[in-house]
Length: 214
Length: 116
Image (cartoon, rainbow over all chains, first blue to last red; front, side):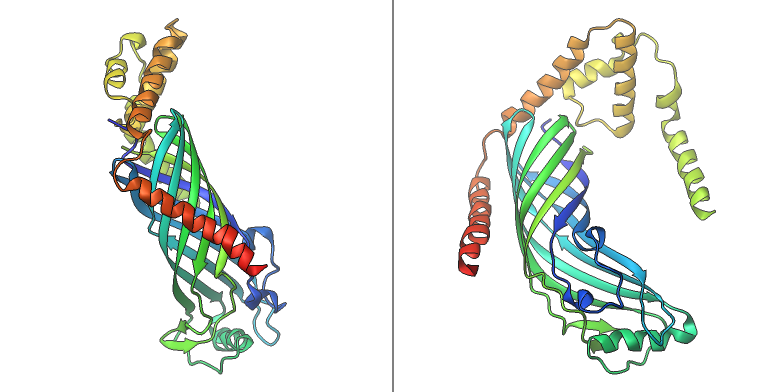
């Protein structure tokens, strides 16, 4: 047997996007480190070749808080930006416990905005939110969430230290390129304008704990 | 309340899964068959239950005056085996790695220069 064929990972990432769609309006929760720069990460990898793994890895940025919409019911606002990656990773061991790895991956990004609003105020709250981005009033059947998908790619270089033969600490750095457009949001079948994210060229750092299952 | 219930369900589930390995007393830990199994195959192919059991056996064996050298050798052998298999890149993997380095160089160095 060699090193783990199947491994799972959890960790955290750091990056620095410019989310002017939120920063330019004081109605949204205040930008802080945890809701701007921090990404939570999980993933699963399968070693399919001698020095290569394939897998799924997801980095997500979360934000939540009260929406200060004047005239609305101040609903709970929730936003996520997920960078879902399908990486191919090659690696070699520099020392018995130290590995270098090289990752290239396409990204299937998704952002989601949700309002937890009272049923009677749902329409008003959504109209106020959508108005911020220049939309007209949208007919909503029930409470919903607005979503946007985009594609991108990422390259990362990593170093992994094995604490045990099946347990490692992985540090990665690299970049992400995302082809995001604020014009491609949708809400219950309606095409709408969404917040501006400047996430096209971003350096990324990540720290992960990798556990080999088999 | 829901979280409390979920916690209890998880605890009961984990207990029933691992009870035998978690709480049973280990007789003659230094002669336990799991040690020779790990020596032969390494720790990687073992299930989580077996890994927990092995850690308990190791602890019990050391407490009973067993040699730490035996366990250190098992781990070292496994590291060296992995090192031997992964110290050189095979087939297309080296080309792929160079591509990643080129992509990073392009992004961080040439991209930065283009912005300046």
